Length: 191
Image (cartoon, rainbow, N blue to C red; front, top):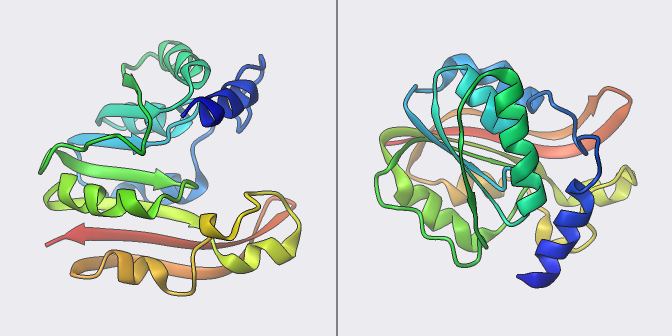
């Protein structure tokens, strides 16, 4: 935990927001599909997605390993006039309470051992929003993780969330601003 915490505290310790204050475009573009209620933002970082969810009527729990990131998340929430609940956690040890959430958001963080906990933590009818890099992203040389374990294989999210009702799925190489990225994006409902 200490090495990961140190790495992310360093990234989020700067004055500016490392990823900006605007929410993830995939989440923003699909907010209308998501059931209102209690939400969990996994690996929230500086909280841009958690704050966006709170602005859209969700009661949000935001979890991350970086205290500096969580501090900025709380600051951003105050700035936007909303409340989020922040929790400093090591996601290797984190336990998601069974049937607790209407929505779980997991964006650009891949820890496969966490997937069963996410599945279990959703209420029936609850939804997961999941987006991260595909293996071929490494060939684009546009940033992102280095180790293969942090990349999805083709159609892997469909397997990870089998027995869920798939509301939206795409994978491939997309342009976001000036940057190209190879990602898989999924919205799925627990049935």
